[in-house]
Image (cartoon, rainbow over all chains, first blue to last red; front, side, top):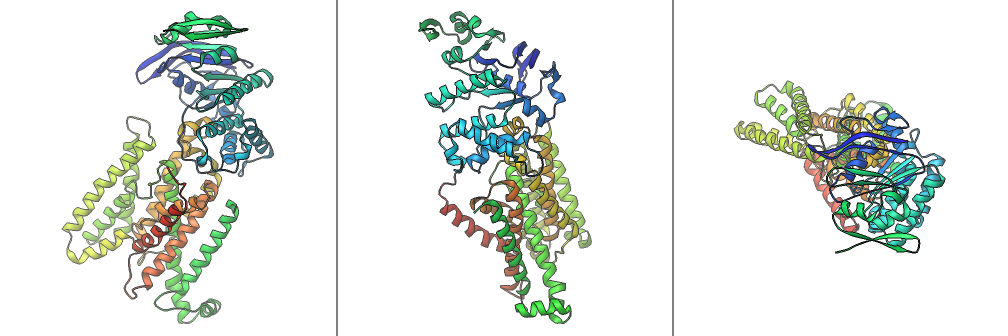
Length: 254
Length: 323
C-alpha cells in the first residue's frame, strides 16, 4: 500500500535517516520509535505528502505520491500532526466535520455520508455531548479527542499519528489504541504512529520502525525486533525485559 | 441564532440602514419625499438623491465591504488577529503615488499613480517574502510591516517638504475621505467576486485557521489558496484606497465584531463582513458629512469612533475571548 524506497529524511542540510526502505500493507499497525530529534516527525510529514522528498518518490498504491491531487491523497493517507494552530473559533462538531474536507463535493459540501461519519467519529471518542460547545473552550484532553476524531472523520486508508497520546488519560489512551488495532484488523486500514511508550507499543502494534540516533533504522515485526537490546541502543538507556503474564514489558534500569 | 439566519438579518439590516442614510445630510429628505422623488425621478430631491447621495452611499458601502472582507481574509492568511488591509503597506504605496501626484501638481494622475504605488507594494512584498525561503505568515507579515514602515517615512518626508496649503488635503486623504470618491463598477465586481470566493472556498479557509500543515494534511491546496487570498485581499484594499484614501479600522474591527457574535465559518463570515462593513462606512460617512455640515470630516475618523466602542463592548461581554 505504502512503499518507501531509499528515502533520505533530511532536515536543513542534515540527513537524519538515510536510505530508508519499508512497505506498509493494509492490516498492519506500525509504531515509530526513536529518541528525540531523530527525524520521526519529518518522516511522517514525508509519508503524508506534506513535504516532498528530494529524490526517490514514495509510492501509494504503486503510484507516485506526487501524481495525486491534494484531495485524493488525503483520502489515501491522513496525518494528525503533533501541533496545530489554535485559531479555530467554531464548534466541536464543525471542527470534527472539517476532517471531511477531502470528501466534500459541491458547494455546500456536507453530504449525508459526511454527517454520518462525523457523528460516528464524535461518538467513538465520546465527545458527542460536546459537539455544540466551542472548540476553544475544551480542556486539553477533550481537544485532543476532538483532533483524533477529525482524522477518523477524514477516513484515510493509512492513518499517520504524530504522538497522539498527548493529554489523553489512561482510559483514553487504551480506548484509542484498541480502536486503532480494531479498525486496522477489520476495516482494511493501516496505521503508523509516533509513540514514546514502548510498553504500549509492544502490546498494541504489529510492526515497528526504529529510528536510531546514528541515522540507521530497523523495521519489522514487533515480536522480532522489540528486544531489550534494540531498545537500549535506541534510547541510549538500558532496558530490562520482564514478563507480566503473557505480555513482555520493558523497564528502564539505572 | 444560526449562522444562516444571522447572515440574512445582517444583510437586511445593513441594506435598510444604507438606504435610510440616503435621506440624511445637509438637506434632510423625509422618507415620503424620498420615495416620491424616486417615483417621479425629477425635482430637487431627485437631483440630490441621484447625483449626490446615492453615489456617495454606494461608494461608502462598497469601500466598507471591500475593507472588511480584505481584513477578514488577511486575518486568516496571516493567522493574526491584528491584520488589517493596510498591513502590507498597500495604503502607504498608494498614498505615496497620490501624494506625489498632488505635489507635482498633476492631480489628474493621482488615481493612476495610486494604483502604481499600491501595485508595486503588492509585488515587492510577495517577492521579498518569497526569496530564499518558502513564504509563510511570519515572513509575510514582517516583510509587509517593514515595507510599510519604509514607505511611511517617505510619506512623512513629502508631507514635511510640501507647501502648507496642500498639507490639509493630503492629511484628509490619508485619513480616508470619500468626498471626491466615485463608485466604480470594477470595485463592485471585485466585491461580488470576493463574496463568492468566501462562500465557495469557505471550508478551505476554515481549515487554514488550523495552520498550513494541518490544512495540507486535510487535502487543502494551501499554497494556491494563499496566493489567491493575498491577491484578492490586496486588490480589495487598493480599490478602496485609490478612491477614498486609507479608511481605517473597518478592516480590523468588523471581522472581529462578526466573529464575536458567534459567526466564524468563512462561508458566512465573509459575506457578513461585507454587509456589516458596508453599513458601518455608510453610517460613518453620513455622520462625517452631516455632523459639521457644511464642513466635511474625514470618514476614517468616524469609522474608528463608531467601531472601537462596539468592539470593546463585545470584548468585555465575552470574557472567554483569549488567544
